[in-house]
Image (cartoon, rainbow, N blue to C red; front, top):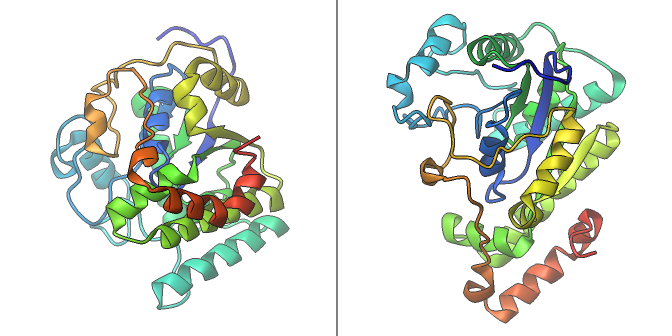
Length: 292
């Protein structure tokens, strides 16, 4: 590997975005950089035997099995443990954990000795040794994981915050989750409101990137990301390296380095649905400055 001209020792970044925002694609493209480790959605799901970017199932992938066998985890059948369990109800627990971690980060309280953070730290050390790179992007998209890691000895050097036209998100959520336009718009509002509030409340260093700009003007967008992360400007619009053990949608296995605009919402959402989305998300979109 060529010697990097910019100092890049042990930096950690987070990529935050809801589902259906193109975060996995952005993560994989950034992973083509010679200084950056970026593994798509970062970790396999615990729900089924996912296919790794190398083409093998996680249960048969040497990379992931080495992690499972060398990094202690409780329970042992998971690659990473759950964050915290304060309340039995999963939805309420998620909110409770969010509030606890937000407050802990605000007052400077640090967590050092719990199974999630011990395992996560060991995971970071492992992937840095494996890829011989120092800059890591966590693409899990979870606000609670971001807060968990931030409230630990693992410093966070910044957040890449990906946003997308709400109409595109609503169409994808409607088709994939079988929910209404109204419900999908509420999910969009909730996630982005929480991210904006969290980042601003904690005075986090972050760079907002829009999916549409990334697709339409990738060189400039990537150049801004390189500057934000203080890494060399490289051509990374390339097919995904088969040696990268990434997680994410299998449709990206065929990514050839070219970016294509997708505006199916213009045909597949009727005018009333489009207007409803714009009305429901107007406040959040104004905060995101999506429309000038």
